Image 1 (cartoon, helix red, strand yellow):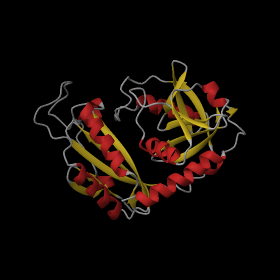
Image 2 (tube, one colour):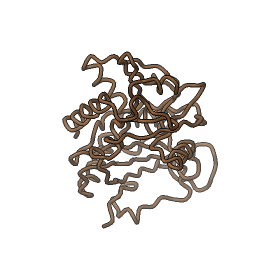
Image 3 (spheres, one colour):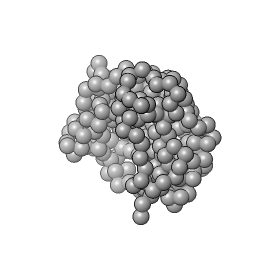
Length: 285
């Protein structure tokens, strides 16, 4: 059965969802996206995602075609129309389609807004129990990684390299330090039981799940340090894990073929995952 998508004011079957070939998202990657998780037919931590959306479009002088309140209404309508119990809602806004292809911002063009859903059992994902392998790759992205741009070619190449190696994620390395995963935030638990994740800045995307996990950890009096760390430090750690809207908290059991800790999912990652799932269910809208 064809799912329902949203395109510029209309709900349409996904197979019929279309935008112009002149859309600047297609021609220039001139757009911003967000992905919100859905649990029990409700949006998880959506206020955080919408706040990040507002910030990202502001950083590239892109006006939203709808208010944040209306965008959330559309998200919820998509969840309802698709009878989505567990999965993701993808949202993309671009600068729209002009009458030709020119680099400067066009005038009098309405931005494009597209949304669709996908089914995914995030809570019961097998990798949450088995953990994932990670490989490392050079970070070749632009310098404004804090903007959630649809320009994802570097991440595509990184994650394809991971897939070809049989790994679940790629950690990107710059100046000898881990920046982040191809579509996730990187964490380690040191031998001194300190949770370490890179501080927010232009070098990484400010992860919504990262933000929530850090807050939940601190509320439980766990020590958290926001700083960069090396691969060697990660391999010497007790545990490692990633966070994202599409995986929540997922253990990392090896890096470049070398085991992290025991080489099996650790108790801290498991506990933080349980805490986050409880938080997600309690606060979903």
